[in-house]
Image (cartoon, rainbow, N blue to C red):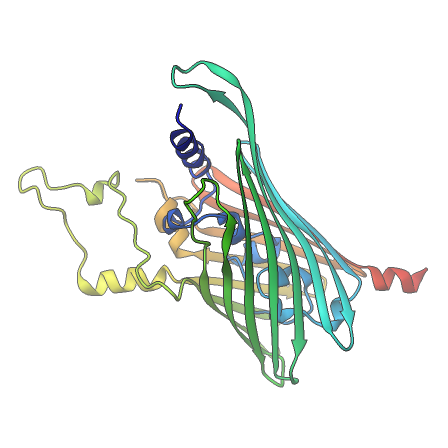
Length: 352
């Protein structure tokens, strides 16, 4: 089988094994960079947050949240997907007073093993596929109200016999009100390029995205609402599913029923919006809910939407440990389980 044909087949397979990536993702490579790794982020429906409470797991996608308080903090996260796919990260924070605060992390995704076959359908052995990103994040407070940060990424991808190397950076800025109740972040993600493409001469674009994250916490109620505005660099996120009965032509006229102008605008606007809510009970237990409209519209099954696009999670804080679990539904009967553990090692050292 020609190399280019084989590559296309492998890549198409990876995009259809239930990852739940947005349909617009077909324009980019290294899409694993957009996955929700943190259980807390996943519970609130998105892939980044604007919440300033010294949670190191949020800095994977929003480096402007890196603070000195994350010094000697360690976090690990694991996500399991039906079909043998799993991904996650391990990260550690360190603070240097003059240089700023840093978070180093290793992000990975393992697609498992596949049966390799030639053009005649003869089995020729197994092949594997996996991708990695080594991240170094930096953050600094410019004032009590403003902070900035950046993530540098070295990306390696191995899909069967195809290999690729890339570099990217995330840049972000965060504003926090004096009362610490409102937070807003502007995030530019995955600004970079392929250094070594899968196929010589075919350099692909990275999944660049511009986001705005907002969060509002009530003063006298332990409730926080979050909102993420995604893909601000691209307005039209609609995807025409020709298998949807609503998009089938009329058997008599041959015309396809189209939405009105207002309906089109509203639908497209909501595809940029991710909503979440977090209730904290006695400063120990957190209950989280999220809703991702775009995910629901693209991945719901015809006639059976179920809970597609919804996510629910809990978080438990006990002394130096923070444990979070989330179950996010992508399609009816297909969900992901996220588990994240963060440990404050400096508290452990103090006790010793």
